[in-house]
Amino acid sequence: EIVLTQSPGTLSLSPGERATLSCRASQSVSSSYLAWYQQKPGQAPRLLIYGASSRATGIPDRFSGSGSGTDFTLTISRLEPEDFAVYYCQQYGSSPRGITFGPGTKVDIK
Amino acid sequence: QVQLVQSGAEVKKPGASVKVSCKASGYTFTSYDINWVRQATGQGLEWMGWMNPNSGNTGYAQKFQGRVTMTRNTSISTAYMELSSLRSEDTAVYYCARGDYGERGYYYYMDVWGKGTTVTVSS
Image 1 (cartoon, each protein chain N blue to C red):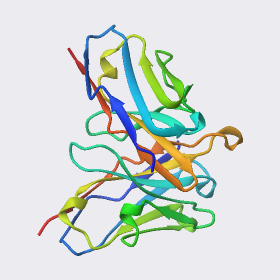
Image 2: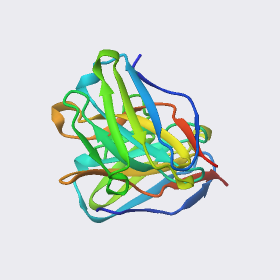
Image 3: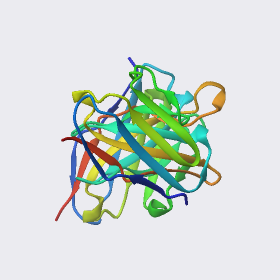
Image 4: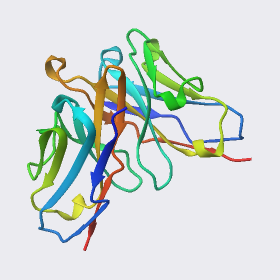
């Protein structure tokens, strides 16, 4: 089973700053199958990025994803107040079929 | 609009079973997978398994093998997740989420989520 590790665990930043979140896989992951989600307290997760770098419908362009192999990054270019949340990376494996999530990175207000 | 509507909160005793429903609307139910993901309070997301509503094929995370059953009723566009032999550690919010392969079947992601069903296991 592929294990995803996210760092840092918590990122304390101010609005307007740039956030860089890391997701590392225990073995190579197809970029097609790497996604990022945002979750706010009391809400369901929301898809941000799929295919490592494609923004989901309605996601602002301040969110971007990059990476390949075992190292992936989610970047928020300029934090807006509504961006303070927990972010999860997720990978899908086709053989055997399964999904794993990283433990999450909390972006909070400094 | 495209949405997944889940059943209400449940309180169960240890050893009992719970069955959560997830009703799809706004899209063709049989064209997308349904995944189930749970989240204990203050914890991360844990994938439980998937179901293809068209074929009824399922796949479960090893942790839940033998305890979870995912089914569907296509006539009412509803998926179900039943978890048996409940223990206190199963107390969590359970989400259903639509699984999509994207254009040309090149990707896989969960793009529509239900609001979650809280399951509390307590004696």
